[in-house]
Amino acid sequence: MSENKLRELLPQGVIGFPVTPFKSDYSLDIEGFAKNLGIFLSEPFTAFVAAGGTGELYSLSRDEYLAVVGSAVEEAAGAMPVIAGVGYGSQIAAIMAGKAEELGASAILILPPYYQNACFEGILAYLKAVGKATSLPLILYTRDWLQLNPEQAEMICDEIPTLSGWKDGQGELGTLQGLRARLGDRLVWIGGVGDDHVSGYYGIGIRRFTSSISSVAPKLSIALHEAAASREEPELAELTDRFVLPLYNLRARRRGYEVSAMKSLLELRGLAGGPSRPPLVEVTAPEREELKAILSGWKDFLEGSDP
Image (cartoon, helix red, strand yellow):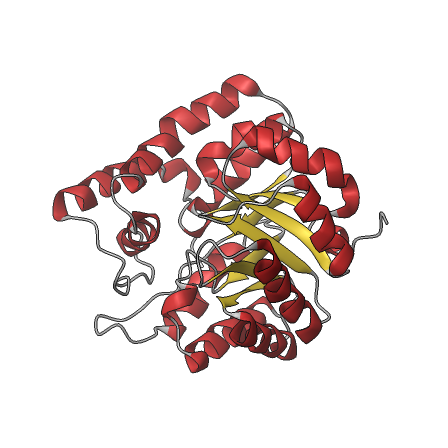
């Protein structure tokens, strides 16, 4: 019951979340994507996710998805695990998971299916289809509308032996504690709301989180983990209040900014970002100036982080 291959694959720490850069005509910038990955490979991240939510999974064609996952595995060259995102419906997600395994991914991150507010039986069938398609460890991402109670979570674990991780996208710490009390070490628990929630996640014992900031200022992400893991509360509070919240406050202004703001920051750093594909929207010109000021404040976390 306590054996979990994902735990060996993902030690405690930060999981990187790269964007998928596009050119001005919205075509895939696979060269820029490969170059950006140098940031992750130069820092002590535990893994990174290719084609996740921040990577605009749902805007990618089949061939683009394969190109992104394949490039990620090629660039990592075994030095760091690559987690591939999957989604849509059961048939498509299963095909994506199988292809990701063929390309050399190390684990699968399952996003909620396309049909919002599906009943539990439908969600279970969706997850089982992915589990049958690959032998890789599965990480369930409970974001947006997908909420499961402890009894449902336990049933999923019983039905799908390869379900190994739980990425929380709700930020409801009381609910998350109830899930962990029920399932304990059966799953690897990952904080997934954002860098601004590190204090809360680590406060209840979680020691892994996915970081959007990692794509731009990886040393800041690492500093958040180190301060939180060692329970250096004043340092963690300063890092969060001074460097993290200004970005997350801006990102909260409009849906889609969680992606387009990160792409703008990458471009301001001289890296590949490009536009976000509709229906995501771009930050405004004044907000881009705000991002420039935020990036300037991060200068101590950028030195030596160029790919």
